[in-house]
Image 1: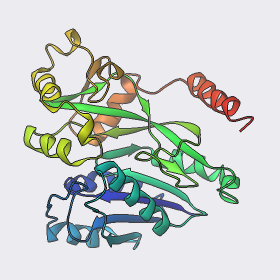
Image 2: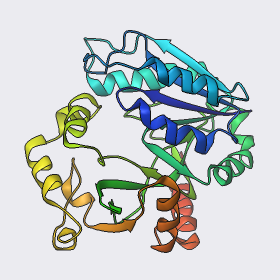
Image 3: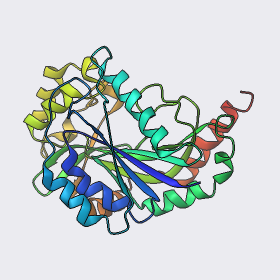
Image 4: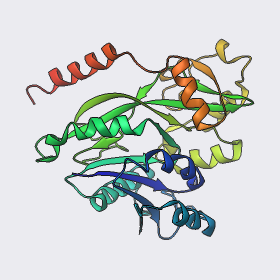
Length: 286
């Protein structure tokens, strides 16, 4: 009954220097899943510098980090099929019977300890996970674009399936089982890249075939601190899902963690209560 954290490691591996320290103390083991042939899910080549592995060795004072290399790219599969396959393989490595927390390199968990404490309070769900499958969801603050002195974020924290007791993944981290919500936040450096980095991401992640790349990049490039509140519909799949943006001051994870509190990005306890009540009612007769 451990807290096992797994990261998918790819072209944005350098961001792990931000995300790993945030979960290190409260994780039992941290697994880094890396394609042994250094391929993306689309089959493109990536390079991971030797200095990154040196950083891992120096940082890992408690010997919690395990490198898991395997062949995660299958030419006959779509990018999303490759993603689901890798997540399931990683989960098997992490061990069924534990809380399986899967994160991406660009996801920065704010107050991971409170999330871990919540998971530990639900340890009864680990006794027979196949019969009581759940996905545990904190909320995600998506960083849309970096600006000088701050960032533009999506003005609504959305759910993210961060943990599960039974990794029956269907699409990305979605298991389509009952969701249990916890009122914690993850900062997601989703689209806050250089133009070149963003284009590479759009071509190589699980949603590559779902995006109108040209139209999306035109809007992303044009929005700034002066005009963001005159524009709307920013999501890369269904634009209206990200209706508006908010400006947050700060350039570091620590500064932005303070800004999300000041700007009221957390949902109310009542909101989370009713989300959980709705899920309990929905699955009452299933």
